[in-house]
Amino acid sequence: MRILGLETSCDDTSAAVVENGRVRSNVVSSQTALHAPYRGVVPELAARAHLDNLMPAVARALLIAGPGKLDAVAYTRGPGLMGPLLIGKVAAQTLARILSVPAVGVNHLEGHVLAAELEHRLRWPALALVVSGGHTDLVLAKGPGRYRVLGRTRDDAAGEAYDKVARLFGLGYPGGPEIDKRAAKGNAAAVAFPRPTMAGTWDFSFSGLKTSVLYLLKGRKPLGRELNDLCASFQEAVAETLVDKTVAAAKKHKAKDIVLGGGVAANLRLRALMVERGEAAGFSVRLPARALCTDNAAMIAHAAGRFLTACGSGTSARYRAVGASCDPNLPLRSWA
Ligand code: KG4
Ligand code: ZN
Image 1 (cartoon, rainbow, N blue to C red):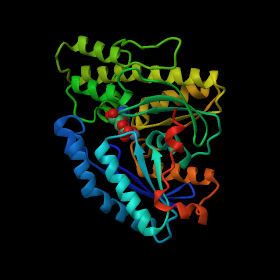
Image 2: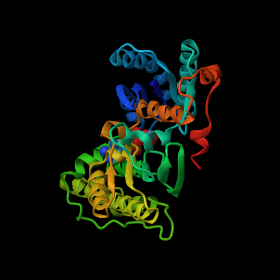
Image 3: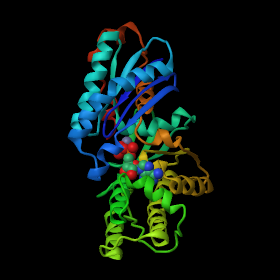
């Protein structure tokens, strides 16, 4: 099954072709430079940039993938920014109608969970940690389309905490990659930031950690070695908090694999610590390549492929008859 995927939920415009779980092309057109002066994503600008960038990204993805008939067009149906999502949806439904194939709406978070499958065979149940700019969800995945959210953040998402703390440090946007780079040169034991546990729940909270950085700095912008140490210490607190709860949940729910997804899953320290502590507890830790952690259309195309296969209909005449109006609710509803 060969699927064209479109991802336009936030500030990256992406188009990809995935064939039977293999990435044939994955084009990402970043809007980072456009939003950087505002130190955050401006929804209206993002929508306009998607309009300009989406069709060139589709053309490039199809060119790189090479010839071959498409069986479906997948798009991110949510969660995300309304304007950018609508642009992806209208484009996908139009292309699907022209090609007489189904348009499949995919939950963005499901895409992040299943991204690891593009490189690894997952064993179910898997315990997935989805950490992005908008989400910090701990998910028990019993199989494709079968998810239970065990816990989530009660305030800032992990990526949001990275971005806000980077701003306190005087670093640019997005802050996650900047902190990651500086942390590699710093001492993680320099400052003992709090590790919020939210005991008795699978939830997370990062606002207290962010506030402790604010109080420590008192408006000062650190530089040089002190900045590197602060980045490393903050990063260690976030990574330990995420890893310890994920491994505990995996034990409790007898998961076979631990899976990471979302932009923060590109963080080098989080990846290393998850492998270290997850494997010490007896789990296989499945990490997508860093480019498949941040927003991309390959994960959306793959999740749609899983959905279509699970429907048992593939590209059958019955499924085709439903055509572009087929916009299955299952992936979104199953994300309870
Ligand atoms: O999944 P994603 O690309 O978009 C959303 O769905 O939100 O995640 C973006 C988030 C941003 O907050 C960004 O700072 C963070 O992921 N991020 C990182 C790293 N790369 C991206 N955070 C920490 N370390 C990184 N290397
Ligand atoms: Zn995302």
